[in-house]
Image (cartoon, one colour):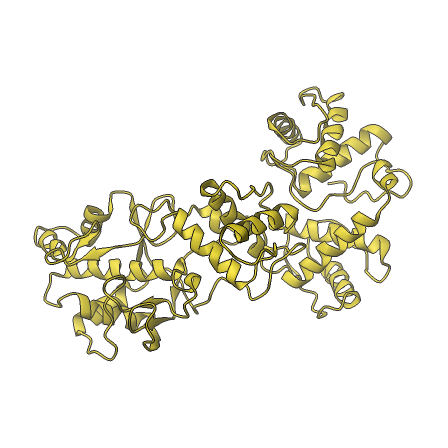
Length: 465
């Protein structure tokens, strides 16, 4: 896995000066100034310092929960939070700030609360505890606890539970929305696709009419089209099978709802839900499985398009790989940068798939078929699964630790067990998934056993690794 999209502290926040549906003004202020204003409006500067610290951390966390879950943008609004105390925090535009509160916020503004096992800032609900009570923190109660000697963290644990964790020194970044700014559709690939696949699969637990996406691999195939289409039908959106801005934010809104992200008893977002499969860019100096996969696709395309330079599959992004990428970009009308961004990856993957679909059946029966371009896993079905089952059965004649399989085109528990046995035997990461490395290894082992180390008839052999 590559990058992780953990919460961050935004440089600024946009506040609606009224209830959500009102025509009140929006103001954008720095996040630090926003918290100073909220703290000066919500709590008394004369309170014990430990109570002030606990309250400020809760206020930071509340605001970050709204921002991280895109609570208001997912409902069609162009702001991050309101100043309505019925649903959000008090913010009095232009008010004076207390000096000691300003000093504490400068120290604490990059600190927030999360729960063990989850990454999102919790919905840190609080109320004054006298005229208004709630399930979260009592502000006046925090004063009593501070007077009894409780530390800020102990006060927060008292109200929010023993499983909370304080995140300190979170990074500060420019605020951004999650929508990628482009419509995702069949053939799209990348982390934005994976983001939607993960959320649709969770939503399908509550709305079982939405079919499960079998491979959450960041590639927009028919499974994703079908899941998106059913989601759109259920929630009265135009049924296009593509994810535009309105569908993107509807998915975020329903995902937040089924996981109760705006409640204290939130289901939480595990780290795997915010971990990207793909590096955002590949360029000179990169190395690893992602580079090997890139080189594989480039080499395959070069067999059919002589304008694309062939490249060795060694997993290292060097000058030859850069030249190959540039030749592909030049041939297919992309900016000739030598760096693989989302647009280049999508064009390369779609070109690869188009070539695969145009090849006659005998091409695939010569020795071994090329990597299909996606991760094969539990729930996958079809010819690609049958092919893996056939390869593993032939390999098991020699390596008897690998169990025999029924060649039925269904990737179930028995096929997963055979894949795991193969991975353990050949020193591959034992995931039970057939990704690029595992597919190549199985195909190469099968080819070696059937015909020796050389593939017949000019068949594309990929890599011997």
